[in-house]
Image (cartoon, rainbow, N blue to C red; front, side):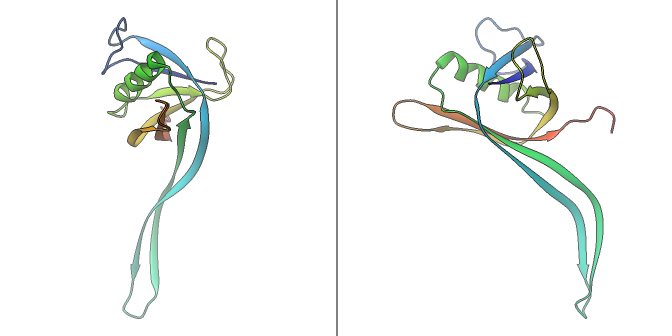
Length: 136
């Protein structure tokens, strides 16, 4: 189970308060790291390329296991809505609630998605993140 720590801001679950930090434990089915190169390549009329390289942005994509727990689905919705404007959050893939192992700070990139896994009412959330460094 992964532990996600975020500050509730939007789409609040009943009993949660805006501005309060919450933990959420959820099974992660897949993690897909990727690297996006930021560069600009110009090609001359003769076909020679000139590339200006800016940086490599490391991103990770996460997908949850299939979930049918309505309370957990509601908290996942609160989580993705609360970090939708680029607010940082912490995720620990190996830890447990209250005992972190390898927490990493992230910022959401792109649009998270919720999909119906099967007709029995199981859903899965997916989202893409960028590692958030407070000291760039």
